[in-house]
Image (cartoon, rainbow over all chains, first blue to last red; front, side, top):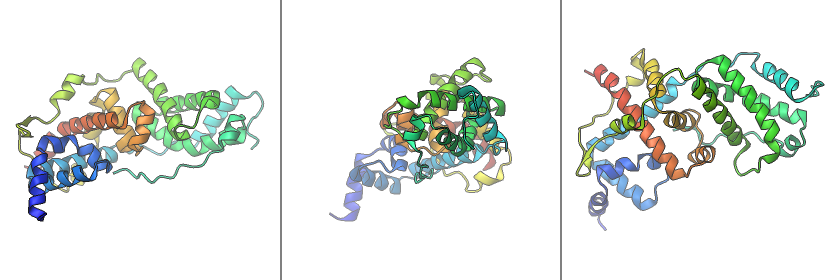
Length: 96
Length: 200
């Protein structure tokens, strides 16, 4: 089948709303081959879906960047082990 | 997308189930930094994060014999942490998250299968130029209902795979994607005015 015809037929099957519904699965690589082809064919010809996908991806990136937290306090592990030793074992339990 | 190729450390499960102190210590040493950061993101306070982490390890050690190995040990551990953190959040809520109906209003609208409004790509420098963007993003994440905030934290920030999040939250992978999608779309809509204003 000619490429343009294949694209047209694929695109015909998916609306912007369908494409939107598949975004998470698309980014997970979880779409079946036929749906992925239809998804990408629609995307290629639709400015709104391309722009929305761009914003969607940047939202994920922004969430990841904004979630930076300070490094844990240096004594965190020793405090935790000390707490657990007290609660779990009467004698020093970790044969360190 | 998150790095899905993280190789989990191999823990000696048999030794853990025998209450071997060295095995417990290895688990605490390996998992504490990441677990602490996750809890700090979820709870917002170091003291609370440390307290919940300690309680999480304690519960894990008490319950290790019931761990059947259906999920990775790390996933199981985060499940315990999540439940502990939820309980604390319910007691000490710092903010009033939005309702499900508010979340509905933040989803895109469609007319005859097409977007009801036009979209254009966000400017590429948006991630770096606006100095207060990180704060705005954190505030927007905090406004999401707990179940949506959790899923953004686990999937997009901690980088758990969809399969792992499904195990953690006891949902199907499809249900995880639906919830995650709604959460990401709500977040996008909350951030959009700040970013598009910058683009004027």
